[in-house]
Every structure is written in C-alpha cells, then in structure tokens.
Length: 295
Image (cartoon, rainbow, N blue to C red; front, side, top):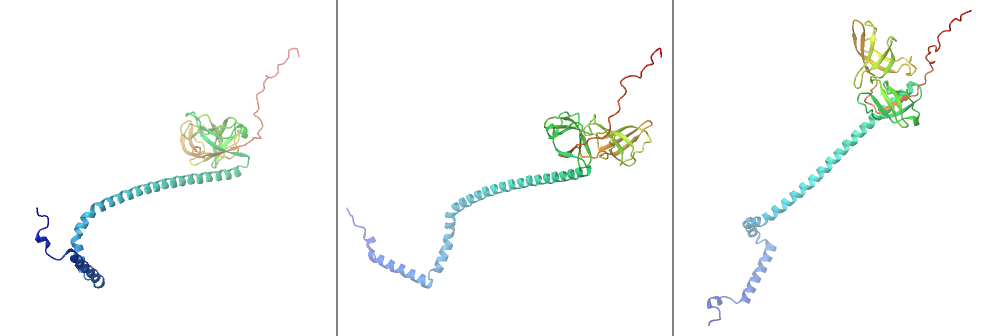
C-alpha cells in the first residue's frame, strides 16, 4: 500500500522556505503600507466590496439594539410624562387652594371692616353645614352656648343681614336665614323711611313685602334696611333690594332680593345686640273695678 503523497504535491519550495518567503513579504507590505501607504487604495476597494457583507452581518444586531433603545426611551418618556402630569395636577390643586384662601382672606377682611362700622360687640362664626330640613333655610355655625351665643342674635356678613340665631347647642348654633318662610324682618325704605316688613318665601326664593297700598311709594332699586322697632335688629343694617313691584287693585306686592350673600360665604358675624327699648306694655290682667251697691 502506498503511504507517501503523490509526486504532484511534492513540487515547489519546502514549507520552511515558503514560511520565510511569506513572512518577509508580509513584513515588507506592513512596512511599506505604514511608511508609504501602499495598500491604502486596495484597502478602500476591499472595504467597499465587503461593506454589504458587513451590513448583512451586523444588521440584525443593530436592529435589536435600536429596538431595545427605542422601547427603553419610550418607557422613560412615559414615566417622565406621568411625573409631569402629576406635577401639573398638584400645581393646579395648589393654585386652587391659594385662590380659595385669597377669597377667604378677602371675606374675613370685609367682615372685619363691617364689624368696625357696626360699632357693637360681635364674634366670628364659621358655617359648618346647611340645616337638614330641605324645606327650611338654615345654617349650622361653630359657636354655641360655651362661646356665649344665645337665641335671637343677628347674623350678618359684609353686605347685610343673613339671618337670626333660633337654636343654640353647647358647641353649635342654628341660624335661620331671612329667606326662610318663618322669618320676617321689620325694615324701612332707606329713601323715604317708609316702615314695612320683609317676609321670606323659602330656600332659593326672593323676599316679599306684603299687603302694601297700591300707591305705596316703593320703587325699583330701593334698599330696605332694618328699622330696629322690634328691639332685635340694630337700626340701619341692609336687608334687601327691590327688584319688582306689582300694583294690583287692592294691594301692591313688592319682590326683593337679599343684599347679603346668604349662600356664598363661609364666615358670619353674630352681633351681640342688646336693645334698650322698654318692654312691650301688657294689657291689664284685671277688669275695671265695679261700683259697690249701697254707696
């Protein structure tokens, strides 16, 4: 059996000789390219020829990397957008709170100025909630017997009369608004001092002056203020403004609106008004003496 390679493969220089030749050639090319740029042109052409292969080999990895970067960036953008939305909502809530505080401070300043003009002792009361009965116009405030509140005190705001304290608890009090059906306020027309009485007509309803003569001297825009003749309301507090006068054949009906913002404020003033009026005279409890017989 033949074990040596064919004579064809034995042609040419020996392996060691080929190694030396190729080593010298390589060193020469390296030195020539480094010193003189001999292979620059060839390298450019080879890179152009190999670019499609390089692109085909690296395209899947580049696509995966770009997709991962895109998804990661989208996640970051969504988180950033969420944080910005939360910050915007918090800023809006803060702005609304500041606006409410500004309105509250303005209302308190107006009440303070009103307290100075009334010229009598009073205390500030905060409205807690509306009365439970939907058919009445009442408010519950945070002042009661322990704070010196008593029934009959008048509640006002910066514009005028709001109502009257009708029930007092140890820590709270119930204020009946002037719009309540059971509330009436003695007033005078500020323009001509005509005395009359204003009646409430129910929640969210205007006020009414009843049973006036058809030719009564009341005009649109007249302001009605407390007369003080009942001893409960101080004199001169604004109550209502005339918005309509219906003159019939027998009576005139006058429709008014409250001057006070009875449904828009959070704080009220409770006036500590004590009337100096004498008590209402009572009828004699015994009939006149009879003549005795025999005299």
